[in-house]
Length: 99
Image (cartoon, rainbow, N blue to C red; front, side, top):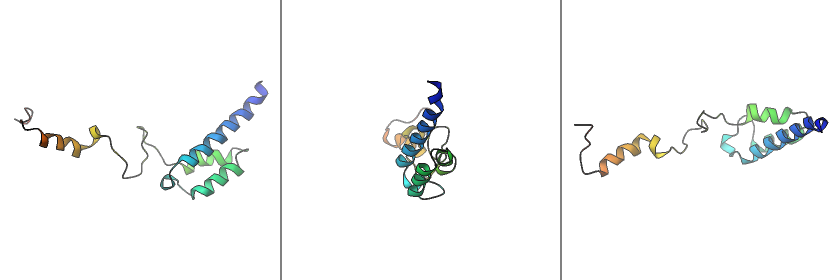
């Protein structure tokens, strides 16, 4: 059973990189076009060059909170200062903190 473990690990990494590449939006792919990355992963997957190259150079970098570093991403309402300011405009009673 242990003699199959390295093969299964390589296969798992190969499949993960392939599916991750397919699910990544085109604007988040770095280095080459998405179709080129798919071919690199498929052609060089057995020797781990393709999947490792995708994970290191092809994926968009992610911040610790899981968001990509691309601009224009959706922001949660409680993290959006403009949304928080708009809450006070709708409230007819004054804010006790500002007085």
